[in-house]
Amino acid sequence: MIKNTLRSSRFVVLLLVLGASLSSCSTPDTAPPNILLIFTDDHASAAISAYGSTFNNTPNIDRLAAEGMLFETALVTNSICAPSRATVLTGKYSHLNGQMVNGPAFDGSQQTFPKLLQAAGYTTAMIGKWHLRSAPTGFDHYQVLVGQGPYYNPPIRTPTDTTIIEGYTTDILTDLALDWLEDGRPKDKPFLLMYQHKAPHRNWQPGPDHIDDFMDQEFEMPATFYDDHSGHSSAPAQSVMRIDQHLNANDLKITPPRNLTDEQLARWNESYDPRNEAVRASGLHGAELDQWKFNRYMRDYLRAVQSVDDNIGRVLDYLDETGLADNTVVIYASDQGWYLGEHGWYDKRWMYEPSLKTPFIVRWPGQTEAGVRNSDLVSNVDFAPTFLDIAGADIPADMQGKSLVSILKEGSDPDFRDAFYYQYYEYPASHCVRRHYGVRTDRYKLIYFYGIDEWEMYDLQEDPDEVSSIYGMEEHAVLEASLKVRLDQLREEYEVPEDTRPIPDGVCGSDVTGWMGYDAD
Ligand code: CA
Image 1: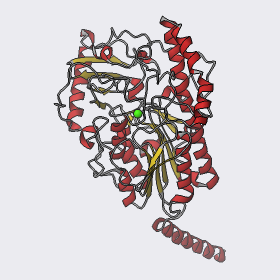
Image 2 (image 1 turned 180 degrees about the vertical axis):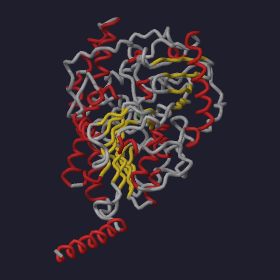
Image 3 (image 1 turned 60 degrees about the vertical axis):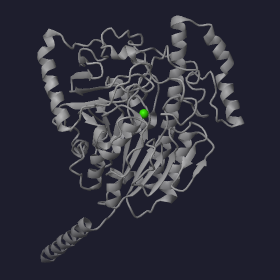
Image 4 (image 1 turned 30 degrees about the vertical axis):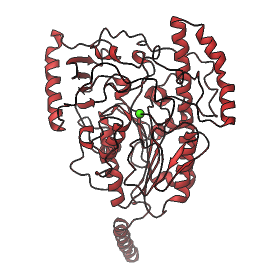
């Protein structure tokens, strides 16, 4: 008995010593987790089966959702490529990080979460689409596309040179990411890998593995495909992004990509039979022609998505095979949402749901419960503070987003955010989408198109497709007033200045030029 007691005491002491060493040193159990951000460009939630796609299956993205947490209401601060990336990097809105529109170079001298993770002992890498013009900062390693980057045979820029790699870009970026994970990083430090695809950005060029997919599928147009905007302000009718009117020959694959090898071009022409399709299309009119364009658009978009999903599967398999999966937080997100024919559109930019929302899934082994769906009002402005919190690093007070760690651990936080602020600045650019800002709550949305002094308001429960604005209706006056108050409060809280940049009159930028190559915005 005495002997046993002594043994127990020793055991307790041993446990205490072990416990002390566990908390003071890095061991596999307490080491900060690796962070893998899988980031795509223009991926609509409607093209992910975990989000309920009726068009396609994405088994690998679905696997992340089944093993982690899927966010149904992840909202972007400014629904366009470079500004979204800047928000992710800084945890701040566009007016504070300086990236209000595409085009100007990102100020890479400012505070970003990769720099802070570096300071916290992480090795950091950026592989894929960067799209911020200035050279990446805060990374121990980078291999990035030049500008938009092409779908085939991409030039890859490193700190020292730019080299063309032959093949399909989505596959190549994955090869580079796996090479870095296997041979490029120090194995004794936690890592941040930002693995960022060009796909499925315009102009939706499929890779060799999926070039024939969906060939016989007729896609059902959304109910709002022929929206005449009679229920909106004058802004939507002024825009240039309709599938039935504004897709060009390059988008519709009447002309093949310019930078293919002979072998790639032969495969392309065999699959697309461009002359026959053009002849066929030239004989179509009205709704038949619209359906032909919609099918063509959807096929190519989804084909680009399928390659992304395949390649995510390669990365998840690698994490499993190497044992990295257990201590790696894997995030899937896009830079914004996208239109698959809602309101007749392709593209993004608007504060309406399909472009305001982005897919966002987090798998954090041992922390997030598997298969949870969360509907809190979260945002891409929350990514940076979340990643820092996951790493155990301090969150700077000037970041405007909030850590999602408690949501990831608890499943939800009903008090996380009652209202979300949005602002889009890039008018006229190529699509003539009027500048606007607004507020979204869990049920309502108020939008102000400040260049033309027009408002819209929606009850998302009654009108989820946002086709009939209820702004200015007497029966909603109290709601309208309260949303305006909340909007003003948010503008003050986030220190949003008046946008006094002159608003040009007249013609939008051409929708056609710039897309033939790969270096356009
Ligand atoms: Ca984008």
